[in-house]
Length: 462
Image (cartoon, rainbow, N blue to C red; front, side, top):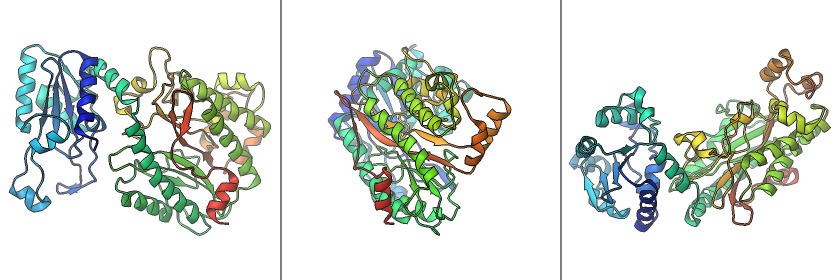
């Protein structure tokens, strides 16, 4: 947790940006795994954490913008709670930790909201992404779950995004704390990247390292020799020499700031010549993006530059042809680079995307494209100092997609389908770093995790 002044200042900034009415913040509840008393690990709502800092279930908060009053709603523990969980601070004590003076039992939240509604006051809501929140809104405000989206406050979303997307020095430090653990995770993954090792053994080791550091994983670990499956969460393969293992993993700091790193690791330490050719194309795209990240640059432009780097490299291999700029403009490269270059990073690994991707990564200066591949770009708008973004280009050979495009005769002027059969079992390659936009350019965050072929070979200890 940060100090009470930090949370009070955050709320004051939000109050000035929004003006009038009430803001309702719903904290998360516990989620039963298979019966009521057996829970998944608790994760607080990130926006609630940002403004109110308390990382426990059963809480809600109201900011009264007109009366300049914040109220934290929660119940003090009873003797049964104490027996099972031990003594806990009172609500007053917990509220004081985040600079809130007024507290009330949860049952009083409905009354506060009903009085505001009766007076015609606006109640600002953020999008609900958990079923429990939809049910709470129905009970508190009479909003049917299917209607909840129409009651969301776009003004509140824009105010929250404008505030949360610019990371303070303290927040960057939290991300780098997570990255230090992630470095240790990748050190272990590379040491274990040997023929005969099961993917699940590596994934389990990484998750254990993250848990031991106090924050756990930031998202389910993606780890597979089937790198052409972008979010492959199964770890059932036994690795062998000649495989490549895509690992996309990150840890959370104890205060829930996320890291998100991807490396493609050759099993045994050396790429084949064909693997190395494609790997170096992806690494070039990753590095050219880093060189172009700076304030005032739309991230869509950086994405397109990475795409052109990939298309040019694949043209040299004979897999693409024709004019590179025209190929990218037409979207032909997206057969191989099927997703966007990156997203924002913070309290969420895809920071704030529960508020709507278009609200977070786009604005009035740039709209989402309908083009395949480009429409998957989550962060497109102009970069500002304090943005933390991912840079994660990739090249994938997805047999089903190749077959579809070939049957539809898509981009025949730019794709050499006759040469793709040799790559049907290639898999995929992705490289990802976390980057802070600074006032003069950018800085790659965290301790360097090997990504050159030489550094990878050394880390794998061939």
